[in-house]
Image (tube, rainbow, N blue to C red; front, top):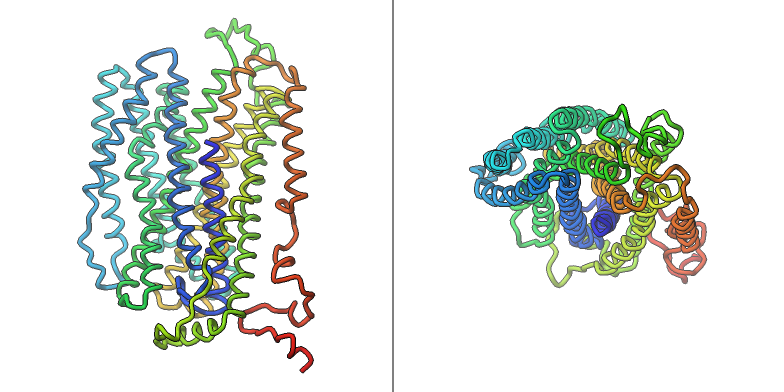
Length: 594
């Protein structure tokens, strides 16, 4: 779980710092095309697609996959069949996912370029997922009949259907085939501010259908099999993860293919048109994958929460004669001040976590921006070549000037590793100091608040970011990319980058990691009363405070503008301080008096 957090958070910061930097200076200031090889940040951007969207998402969903199996096995500990069921289902799901891959095919040739039928391309991918799903239903029916667990089969079906429904709802809110994304593009006529406002509204509204689906699935599974039913539904949702993850990774593959086509002048223009179609589809599949990841993370976290409750509290079966420690402490009444305090504290954590990752992307992007501007100003001939290439001139190999891309890769790598320390430390230390300092009841409340709040924030951020991204793609499809309306949508896309690829997805890991840490320490907290041996909680609390202090002293947690310390130690004149764009050249030392 901890490794998944580092992969997701660091990967997200890496990819979006490079992406935002490349977009702001390259597309908005210099006016060059996306993935132009003369943009120093473009290599880091393409590498980041793999770091964040493939490695990060893979770690996230695999962690959900394993977490759901652990939760179901823990809750089924009283029955051998219930313990074995999640393992059998997962094994069957792997085989079904492999077979589903063979159904992925399309008759679309891509000859119509950006006018290619996107629904037809989407169906090509969906065929594989649906085939894997249908095969898994048959396999699950056989396994559940063999183990005489047919109620669990109902929960598996509910989980599988819920996952597919969340994917379709996410597609509606993030694909430019539908009204929500087109409404964002329309707002671009009045500027970037209205694009951002509309995108936030779309993101917030997109929380409603997935929440209804998740709540309905939880209630139905709980009615069938109680807490175990919710856990086995998560296993069912994630059983065909192989093809779901492949569909998600398709997006960055298509994006990088487009980047390579743009960077190689020998590749015909129609190739770029085709990769743009695949890339737009990839944005939708990526958003669908993120919706699926959020839904599965919530079900997995609820299962881990139920497993924590079973491990941390002993309770008699007959509630009327319950004499357990939990009953003596007042149970788990939401109105209890101790539990309510935990809920409020837990609801705050996803916002803090999202804020830390958003600010990290902003700081890292600022460093990338400064480096790109420096190269545009200092690398001989680079800006002139960019202007000629943008005007449509053919640049010969002898005249071409390439940027120092490795410097941007170095900045992205160092900043992502540095900036992930704070979110990672807080996610691990928060349940430790709450559990040991206050007690398991407060920790139970904290986990509940974090799951509820984290689910909403993650859905809103992921869908808003995906919608902004595809509103920009819609501008490209309409041929208005370089108009004021197109530039307004590029600003929305830039705002949405850390939303959909850093902060939003990392919240999945936050709620699962805190649940997993809590489950791990549950035996140490078993039946502890509130404030029992609270001195043990002082240690993780002290670590929390010390870690924060060190991060502030090292300048990692700071409000300071990173651009203030970059660009050399020489004092700048007011004219140099006013440098805003690559169109303004800094005068050399001998020219300042002229």
